[in-house]
Length: 329
Image: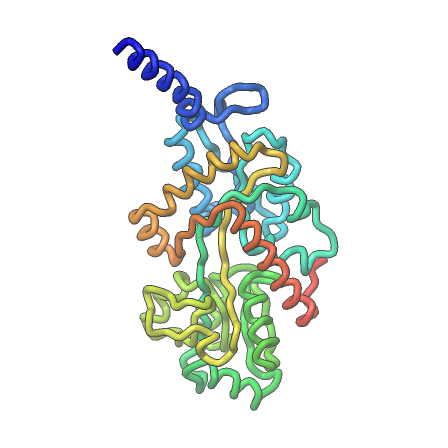
């Protein structure tokens, strides 16, 4: 009995360090992490989907860790100003950043950037994918992708499409469509999504890619005609709507997305701790339902997969930018 008690005591003692490691991650100084507030850089202004995703992540981490994770909106230059600040932040674990599809497009269209996607970041997790919907004005004599392609080929350079600005996701999605379908259309860039949608509803603009959740109310009201969804999988709220690829443009797949990254040099233990908390949030049914209400599909992709995903996205958009001749000074 005495021997058994000794073995039991020894076993418990051996388990304690592992348990403690699972409960608290240490910084290089030996302190438990986190011991102070954490900055969450959101590289776009308040109010949009990127801001929403960032604040949800910040709230989850704040409640899980018992310290304040403070959203810090740093908009400008398509998200590149805030993202450059992220790259230059100390790699101590006290800066967490939101990344979007815009940052995977930027290397292909900007002549000079203040960050390097391969060098300056640790990838944590993909938060969500936001499918875009290709819509037309109801007067356009086209019901599906094949009709749009046929019409564009019959009227080269006559169909007009809108975007939220040069190099933005709606612009690059349509340029990819043009490139892969072999058609020519006229681009009209806007400073934001709201006015471009208004002008499409009025008939001044014939076609556009916009986030599905933005145009869904107008589609349901009959003010816009749904043509296809941009992702390789169908959009759950409109399961009967074909994807662009199903409509005839084989291999087409594109969307907006938001991810979480940290400055390069942060310890892998800290990256893993951030990932575990966010992955738990993203897998919860209530989170998935909340995201879907915002037109987003929750992910939770682990760090290694996210790094590979960003590499594929960057290469894809670089090819589109080169084919379309898109550059931004």
